[in-house]
Length: 240
Image 1 (cartoon, rainbow, N blue to C red):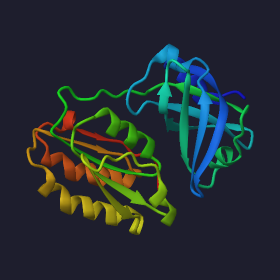
Image 2 (image 1 turned 180 degrees about the vertical axis):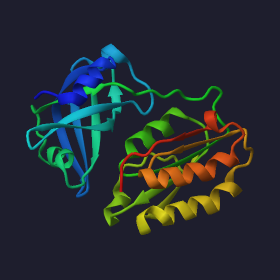
Image 3 (image 1 turned 90 degrees about the horizontal axis):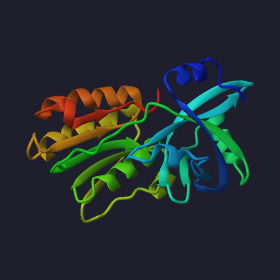
Image 4 (image 1 turned 135 degrees about the vertical axis):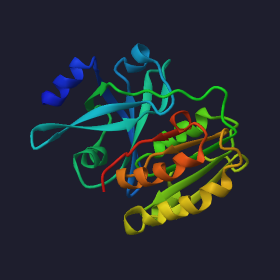
């Protein structure tokens, strides 16, 4: 499958193409799936970093369609990783539901970057949902001993079983049901965050929800930080 004009643009931006092969698939819940892959040489060529993502290509009515997914447990020695899918209607969810060992899929590496602050912040605040959960878990792993508060927006009762990698000693998990297009999450974070930030210079805030919610929360978090350009990362993962 060709990648159309988007693929041509990514080539001009020095995107690198790889083909992944499915080695296993697991339905974590009825709304969430994990698919395991060999990496087609990706990790040997590019290395790894926290929240690393690739653009995966699907076919929609014969036309190429790409979506970004975070690598889960990348192993450069073995050349393996997993992708996790929040199963919404659409070509990506349909592909994940039917994935079987031996299936292949194309992907492009372009645009991914993240550097863990050095030194580590005194506090970490994370806001995410099922779509950004792989990146959330990668972030919690990368920040090691840093105490973290995580707000996780949920949509289904089965989201209680999502694989959230929290350490009860270091992390506080606050599950928030999605209501009114994300308004409940915005209100809960806006209400709690000012009282949780002990030192504005020692906090780091990472937000990855739908675009509208992410913008609202970033606008609220920015004035609470001493240097928001370095202490705030906000990226809309999907459009409501």
